[in-house]
Length: 211
Ligand SMILES: [Ca+2]
Image 1 (cartoon, rainbow, N blue to C red):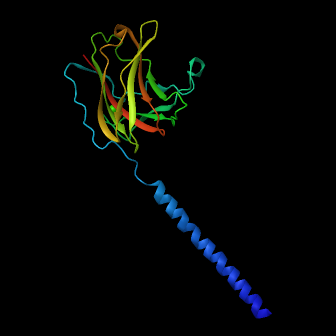
Image 2: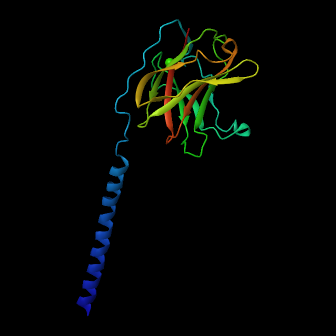
Image 3: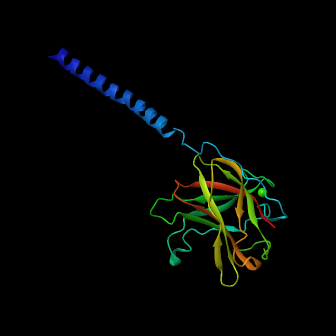
């Protein structure tokens, strides 16, 4: 009987050890699956800098004049998905600092809009402006969809550009704004992350208006 008991205990210990040993293997398998690369745009043609006079509006080297809407517009409509707008020294194209825009996950039932605003544009008379251009760094593994908007005149009239989609990496963003209303009295500059996405970060630098 004693030998039998020892055998039972030995078998029980072996089963426990086998159970313990198998767990890390499962974890490793899961980690590999999660790390699988996200598919991105197969080919992307970089946008060209438009001709015209460029006026620098912000290179994010002289302080932060931007903010994330977050929940501050909830009383007027669906929840905005911007989280924070802070200066970052991790990347820059005009000086070493850029604007780090952090946006929340955007599912199909959300506003699918994360807005980052500046209420103190360096120039407020944009009469004749044709484009907003900026350098962007999409640090995520997924595409980011952006547009720009301005609110103008005492009526705070909102006009926004077409959406552009950028794959991961550094790009020149060029938004046509020649049909915008009230460019003689710009009150607020806005960068919007739009469409469904899993949330993330996009860095912005060298925000210019082209006339
Ligand atoms: Ca900069």
